[in-house]
Length: 101
Length: 140
Image 1 (cartoon, each protein chain N blue to C red):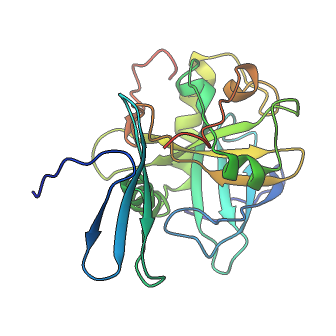
Image 2: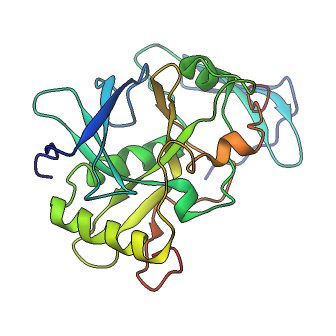
């Protein structure tokens, strides 16, 4: 792997038309700006993980498998009202990550 | 997955402006609920043929789950903190061997007020895309 040290405001170039600039850095995160031709797909690696997992999940179980799994939930936990009891996000603030890298 | 509709099923249609990873072209999904699978649900696209996912409420799998949304995701949901609560579902996978797993890395986030949804990748938290649903778990 090619390793290079860069400071905020500096950049690296890949090939003739891809530029990656270091916009910001904290102890835990680095904010990158990527300039690339439209034909070059720029994507976070985790999105590819989610995509592959979605492909596998779309094969899905038979409905009787789903019913059997649901029965385990019902016997181990009190019945949940789908509209009222499934909202961890609503009960805790949802931080805005827009300014985070 | 077999056709989930039955006389006791009901559904709500959500629009996903970005689609979901691997299915970006699908922008309209039904959240189908049925007493036979409660508290689980089925998320199925309104395409032909439909793409279907089994889902579980995230709160049942991990009560202290934390969600972070980007400004783009909030805009796509037309949601802000002072609005109604969001629905969170984890997509389930049923491998040929081993227990079913839930994708806590990328939950499906639904705004019931606007009927908009996104699948939000929570890369900043160490949530697994293969969270096991062990049958000995207290939640199961």
